[in-house]
Amino acid sequence: MSFRLINWFRYSSPATFYPLAGKLIPWFTALAVLFGVAGLWVGFFVAPTDAQQGEGYRIIFLHVPASWMSMFIYMVMAFWSAVGLSLNTRLSGIMATALAPTGAIFAALSLITGSLWGKPMWGTWWIWDARLTSELLLFFLYLGYIALRAAIDDPRRADRACAVLALVGVVNIPVIYFSVQWWNTLHQGSSISLTRSPSMAHTMLLGMLLVALAAWMYSIAVALIRARAIILERERHTDWVVRLPELNA
Image (cartoon, rainbow, N blue to C red; front, side):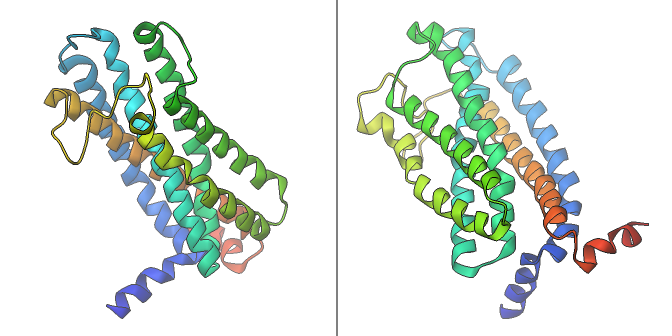
C-alpha cells in the first residue's frame, strides 16, 4: 500500500505529471465526443416529448449537465485549493487554475440555457429566484478567481490567495443545490435523487446522464491541456522543460 501511495505521489511533481497528462488527453477527448454524440442523439431524437412542456423541455439535456458541472468543478477547485494550502504542492494550484475557465463556461451555459428554458415556461428571461441568483453568484466567483489570478504576478502568492477565495466560495454550492428546498422558488425541484426514483422517462434520464458524462470527460481533457500549458509557462527555466525538444525529437 505504501509503495502505491509513493508511486501516485510522484505525479504531484509537474515534471512527472506533464507527460502523464499528455497521454490521458486523447482518451478523455475521445470519450467526450462519444458520450456527447450518444447523449445528444438520445436527448433530441429518441427521448419522448414531455406531456406538459412539449419539445421545449429538451434544453434540459444541455442545461442540467452544465449546471451539474459548474458546481462539481468548483468543488474540485476547492479540493485542490485545500490540498495546496495544507501540503504546499505546486500542482494543486496549477490544477485549480486550469479548471476555473471551464467552470466559468459551464456556469455561463447554465445561466443562458436556463433563461432560454425560463422564457416559455415562466414568461420571463430572468427572475431573482434563489437558485438562479446563487448560480449567478457562482459565475461571479469563477470570474473573481480568474481576475485575482491575473492580478498577482507571483504564481505561488496567487495560488494561496486564490485557494482562500475558492474555499470561501465553496459554501455557495450547497446553497445552489438546496435552494429549491430552503426557499419558495419557481425553479423546479431535482428530477434525480439518491433517495427516490427519477421523475422522468428512462430515455430522458439516459440522455441527460450521457451528456453529463461527456461534459465531465471534456472538462478533464481541457483541464489537462490547460494544466500542461501552465506547467510549461511556470517551469520554462527548469532543465526538464529545456530538454523537452530533445525528448520529443
